[in-house]
Length: 53
Image (cartoon, rainbow, N blue to C red; front, side, top):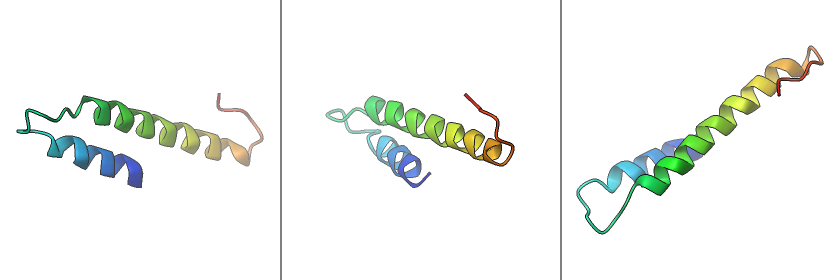
């Protein structure tokens, strides 16, 4: 979640700067959070041998 935290901070830093847009950082942040959630779900199923797809 290090990347997600960095992306969140970068996006928040664009507020008040009309020449910068935090939208793309927000999309990247959402992807990182989703990837981390998916990876956690997979990890919980490793021991049981089931798929979390």
